[in-house]
Length: 179
Image (cartoon, rainbow, N blue to C red; front, side, top):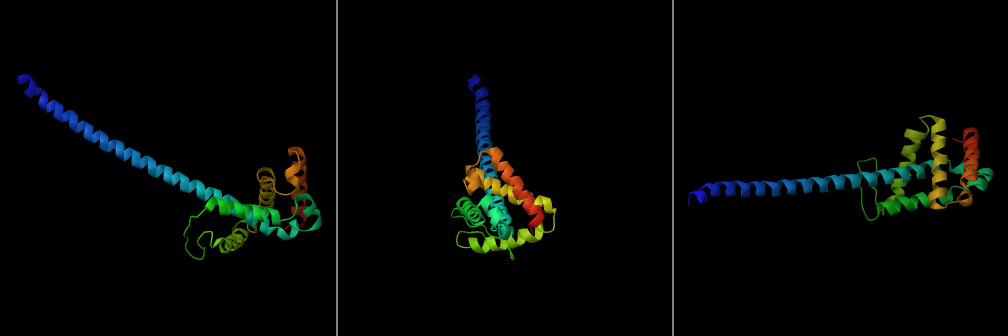
């Protein structure tokens, strides 16, 4: 009987430890779920920002891209604008991302309003105030990505070396004639 009296407090301590362990496991699982949710939200924001930035870059140089020589090289701005708008819409899905004015919320219903705002914002804050060569490089990088990953325009059919040559031609034209 003495042995059982001695074991009883140990059993209670062991059971109490199990209870804490369960609470710790639950807290760890909740923290892991919150971290995954934050990572997912950050990934969504990054994908949206990339596609919106590319849409804005192409829109910024639309007049040049629609002129005869660049249009022969890249196929004009319209296919790239359609591609990047579609990528934003696809990435966004049915989600609504609230924003504080003057930035409009980002949703399927308000996508055109958001993109109009984003183009003006990107032009004012990034493309015209920063390094001009870097801004032009953003445009050509977006054209190259659209061609490679989205099969957009005549450059999509070229091998990588030929595509690189065409991108270099566009960089030269942007440097000479771009905004």
